[in-house]
Length: 362
Image (cartoon, rainbow, N blue to C red; front, top):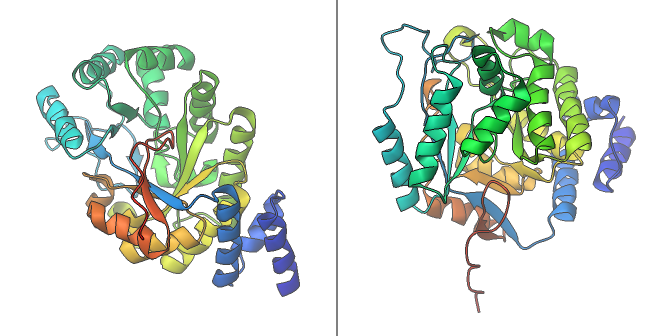
């Protein structure tokens, strides 16, 4: 068995594509150090540069009203719930101003599936943001939201995306993926997009020249084989379009209706991220998930397949609602990168460097 795993790790490290069965064998392996070495070898081959990246943005949840029910989500409120909100436009713009003042050039804007907001409302919001902050990229509206827009507006997906893009949408985040296997999705969510439609939002957006990120929330009701199926579906779309800039995975945070499930620990997180790096041979970047794992594991993730520390994340509400709250300062994030022997560099969502390199130490 050990020799088989060693051969698979060498195969992946050399750039050969793993099959789903081979990916599953690696997920079933408990030699975390060996998985990490192989994932790091792939990262160094794909990213031989002397730096590792991060970005500065803010998660803005423009509404918490959601027509779907996700058993793991403690953030949403049902339509007509007295605790439901839609951010006033002045509050939204103030949050963006604060982000810009801190050096940010992007907002990650997501909400629930609000049944009473029209496509025109979203277009107006995008235009308002871009008129005040033309330099800010709007990384907005997860695939479940965009799919829901098509239902509310009764318009084709391509039309909805064209209109959002024309109004100022810059890129699409990978939220709402959870596990891209319908058995899992039907067990933990109701009224939410299924696998093919989640993927198709990204596919059509990519065909229009857009970029997006891909995610996975694991460690709940899925099997290891279903984690690999998730990765396989992403890899297939990336083969078609090349539009995913990055992959981010994190562990399910027990809470709400799924509070009884045990939390997946750091071992499972690092193992799954390492295998993701080995399997997703066509997605260029992997982000660490320090938001769910904390600073130290988030840092170690840079040795287990990640080449990016993710966002400073000036504001985060959804994970925090489940009871998991980790915060970093900009200097803590930079120091975590420096301690591993890399130079910290700030980038945008398209992985273009947007800072000046640090002076070399004599």
